[in-house]
Length: 273
Image 1 (cartoon, rainbow, N blue to C red):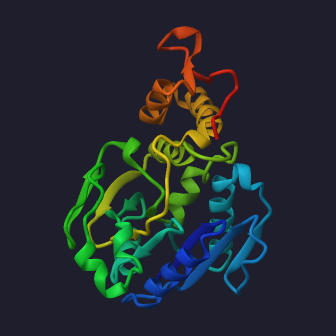
Image 2 (cartoon, helix red, strand yellow; image 1 turned 120 degrees about the vertical axis):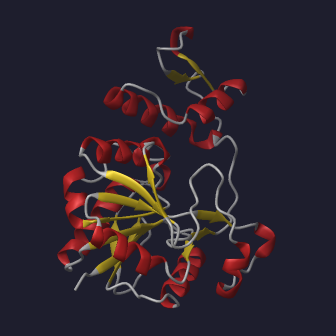
């Protein structure tokens, strides 16, 4: 019997976590193992909660996901399903991920994610199918379909699943990343280097609850530059290029030495956040 774990890293967002729990409870297949890693969030308690002390200004998301995976594997999980705390799941999401990862242990699976509109709050489970409108920047096969993806740069950590053997092959997330950005793009590159495949499963749908964001996220400029430079040292190219270009237009960051190949730096050390 395949044991499936659902893993979530959280700092605050208790309402979003509660909505995620409701969606998991309503699914056609409940997780056999549930792990919630509280990052610097001592008020979050429960039998599934594991605590990781953290600086709220530089949340160690990579370390939190690795801790969640270790806890799940210690509890006998065969399939690891990672969900962003903002994501509610469709009725068949856990079952779809469990079946796909068990049948294809050398593949990383992602599902379509809908960004729910603010005006639809409070989100009711029965309304999710009607609100289904997956993000246009990622493949979105219909339920029942699976598609192969060659572009590992499209991997994102909002909702994905893999077999325990695939997880072991990657070595997990790189804990040198802290704060906003790049740790999931780095993980995608680690998966590619390990020889894993990337596929999308249209039955593994998720629904991202609305919360305020900045576009571009200037309050995270320091993290983006630091993590982007670390990524470039690892892989030879800069991630988050769109955010960096937009922040450059605002005078928050600039090209180092003015050249396109020198990377980015903060302007006068100012993160404007």
